[in-house]
Length: 465
View: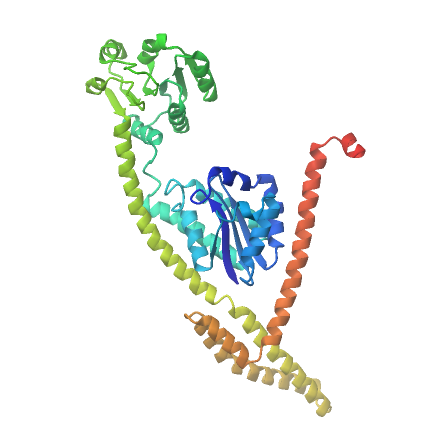
């Protein structure tokens, strides 16, 4: 079998293209079944995220595989091939396996080392496994990729260092407070950066949010989204007195808070620490604030320097993960070389069994005077001779299949023992079984889809239809 991946991602396709090729979650089961029913496809997994759409398939022949995958994409998304061909990438065998390992471990992500993709790959695999669109090959490969990615994140700590300004700011605050639980967050301005930062703060445990903005309606919109309170700029000093964390990002031409303004407020705060993040350009907060006792001030340059340092750390960790990927590639390659052994050994044993049965039938006709006990003894002894004759060849072909030119060894073994007919029969039986399974799965998926439609559409409307 051959492993192939076809996809579009953020590296090659702009969002205007990617958004045309997204799988709705409720459509994934049917998409998997249709992909599995595609010519030559024996196993498949579909991965869909905001940054990528990928089809992983195991095929029995590479001939026209790319054509079949392009046709599936064209029909499923109803987009002509000409509109996506230039953005589509197709990797085969070792390149496809390496790509899977890189994606799962976060090395191919927009933010290198992020962990969300690991969960997405795991969910995609589990769904395919549940729908029986995976088999021995992908069950082994995807489990190996997920296990390696978990180990890579644990051993290298690649995801521990924040690489966005907003997230870096939140992590800095943790060093000061230890925990954001029950901390009051004051947001000055209601722009995108403020929104991202408060989102990270909320996920880190900050529960009390106050949004101060010149336009009250905008402050109310952001505050409601995070369960906070909206206020106006004229009450800034009042809120500053009770806040633990200040995030400022406005379009003001001058300082929103000066050292003189904050100096009076600090006296009433009674030495409580004040963590201030100035993520505005030009700056909102007077730089002299950083010299005041119990005030921890960071501007966007401080945070960006931290992000850059963390990115360097991630790249160092990525080098380690690249080495892990090489090891995993070699391990999977060695395992996959032995994958073709079982059918060949089964064919040899089946042929030997048929020869033994035919020989015993001939013996019974030529020596009808033999009783049942004598026939059993002869059958047992002759079967033992056959098994002993096969033992060494089977051991040797297992060893040779695990070596570099294992495919050639298997082919020669097949010719020497004339097993082509048995293998063709096995392959035909497997294809017929897969076809029946695919047809049954498609029928179940259609029935499930129809059942959902019946639930969502009133009965009288269905009757009229």
